[in-house]
Length: 291
Image (cartoon, rainbow, N blue to C red; front, side):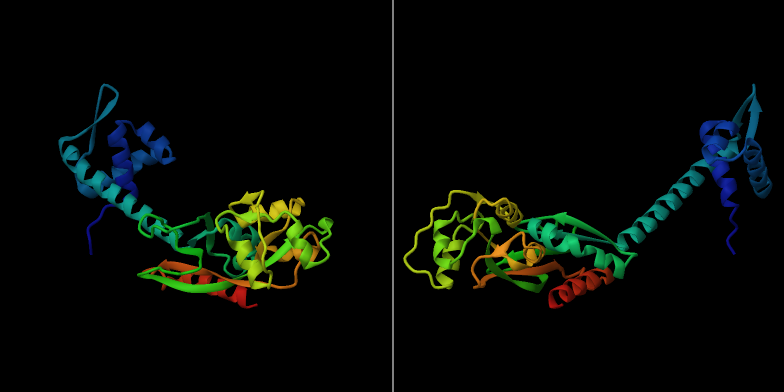
């Protein structure tokens, strides 16, 4: 059995010694001055020595108390720091950070996130926007979703999420009646993939065509907004515009779909793939695309 004095008495002693005042210590610990005095007396009784002396309406530490105080202060700080760490660790265990492409986040993941929350209400999902290469050392996300036409990630966990099926869409007010009239429209460019229209048209059988893009956008969510506003025709992954197609605010102007070379991938550090929250979120993502 360890011979340990009561923790509340030690807290009262440290606070009173630090401020040289029972009143200030009482305010700090949210108790009465009488409670502080009682805790100090209990500690003095336990130790068998006086800890404070009064001089000119002040309280001062006795010589033995001065020797005792540094050890108690360090011990309380160690308890506080360890407690903060364990609480913080517990909170982090119930949080998963997902770093996702901007368009996939806003047009696909976020609208479905309530389903994950309903399945796992104790897990806090934090969505972060990310694009381009991943620094797995500096970035603190638990899972990443990226797209690539030639996946080349090493020493990390990689799981294919889904392929990218592109369809040509426009606002119904453009009234595009046949595929041949497509080249008479404004073909909106995805500037991160400047050859996407050329690849698509060749894949569906167009020959001897030339494209001059007059408007370009960096992300799919920008293209979607532009198409909804009637600015032209865009190639968009079907996954990102299911709601717009269903509501009729966008329509597929050519029936042919183009499964291009790009796919979406789940990535994470190997050390994290066995974590419970990571497994749950990864499996939930895979279930989404297989529904």
